[in-house]
Length: 116
Image (cartoon, rainbow, N blue to C red; front, side, top):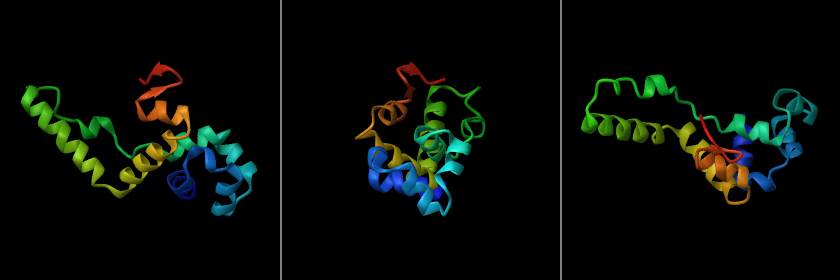
C-alpha cells in the first residue's frame, strides 16, 4: 500500500499510473487489478484513514456541547499527529487538485452522494 500512497502523495491522482505503482511495489499490474479492481479502487484503499470512529469518539454520548467539542478537537489533533494519517490526508489533498473524485472524497462525498 505504501508505494500507492507515495505515488499519489508525490504526483497526485492523474500523474500516478497503475503501472508505476505496480513497478514500485515489485508486482505485476494484474495483481493490483485482482485486489483493487482499478486505479480508483487502489486510491480509495490507499487513503483509508487509520481510525476507528467508535474508539476515536467514545464518550460523546453523554457529553454536553463543550465537552463534546473538546473531545472532537483533541481527537482530530491526535489524528493529525499520526504520520500515517497526515500522509493519507496529504495524498488525498494533492490528488484532489487534479481529480474530481478525489476532491469529492476530500469533501466527504462520493460520486455526488453524501458519504455515510
